[in-house]
Length: 296
Length: 234
Ligand SMILES: Nc1ncnc2c1ncn2[C@@H]1O[C@H](COP(=O)(O)OP(=O)(O)O)[C@@H](O)[C@H]1O
Ligand SMILES: [Mg+2]
Image: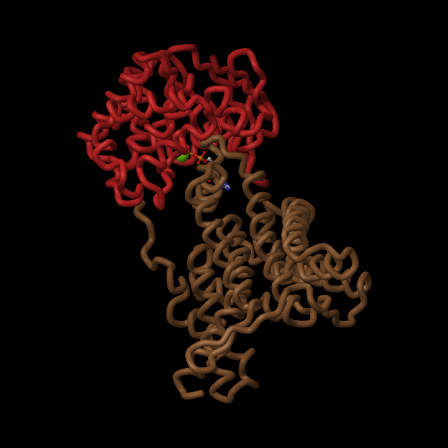
């Protein structure tokens, strides 16, 4: 393979990892947008999604598409429960209280799963998905799995964009994100809208968890690193901005892939945090964030 | 139409309203005037359900609405145009207006009211595709009032609609407030611009540090020496 083929290969690999970051980052950004909370438990919701998919396919022998959808529904339910049980009672408390609670929820979910399913890594059953490798352009490869990652991510992100822009609930979400008191005065039920936001964000994280389970081992702590990186992706794109989260996730996936290719794979995880520091120094509102304040 | 009885509201340990009582008769314009920090906005926020009172009651058309959620209060016909306009700057003028009708399902009637708001504020029609945040201060106030009307309220709560506007615009806004009232909407108007407010209202209350200090027909208050000294500059 020539240099150019290898570059394309790395970019394709990065795209698959980036898709996962993007799906998780969307939940961070939506929850931040609506209640100014960095939901540190979000990476663990992704982990729970991966385990739902595992038990549905390995133990109940469900076909993959059914397991994927059911896991997404289960994680959205989990998201709503977390919001109701842990965050709603703190609505009038200082933000820091909620942030610390989020870390608590994260630790709770990780340890709960260590107890429930043991800390051992699991692998999705072989043959849960048909295997196929495509080759083009003088040796560049991608698999059916990659196609699934790209396809699911594309459908979900465009679906989300449509939902937020064109439905009544989406309109309510945008209004609450912008100004929750003003939204209340329009007759929008803010509590219900926040609940829906957690459901949608967790739905997407659940999808990411099941997708990753088809290629990597899963374990109860698997959500920590992708959770942090997806947070970086959300900040990179401009926290609170939906398209920003997708672009941020894809960029992060690509950068990691290129850094590994350049021979610095030991620094793969550090790159995300270097990006975080740079973006906070140079452009804290993110790539898509406006630096201008709105008119008074 | 609206009767408030001994309403007490606090922000944590800070008591903002110390038991105020007031009455808004059906079809009238009642104004609530007073200095900054007197508790005017707090009163409106409590009526619309954004704040929970510690004590007292709010009755509206025979219902005790004191502990209703904002959503239910809007659906019952009370629309609150908040201080500082609070329009959705990232959405277009028309999207803002449609959000005002969020609680309604009667699409055909909503379309009629949209038309009505555009007739009332032709400038909003010209700018309907523009983002709310790009409007001038006066246009934003028109948008905020128009958005409030989209709920088709029976009672409209207006919090300092003249704030930050040029005298010419203030007169325009006040004349529109009278038009809205003539078409059958009852109005509770909060103002620091006491002179203008007393000109359009039939009855007025003066708030001072969370208490009703004075009340009476607007004409009488406008000529009372106390009010003239404190709020009308002599
Ligand atoms: N969010 C808040 N937290 C604490 N105190 C508040 C808050 N809002 C208003 N207050 C206090 O309540 C009192 C009444 O305020 P407000 O109703 O806004 O007055 P007005 O609208 O008449 O200017 C003031 O003393 C103000 O400082
Ligand atoms: Mg005020």
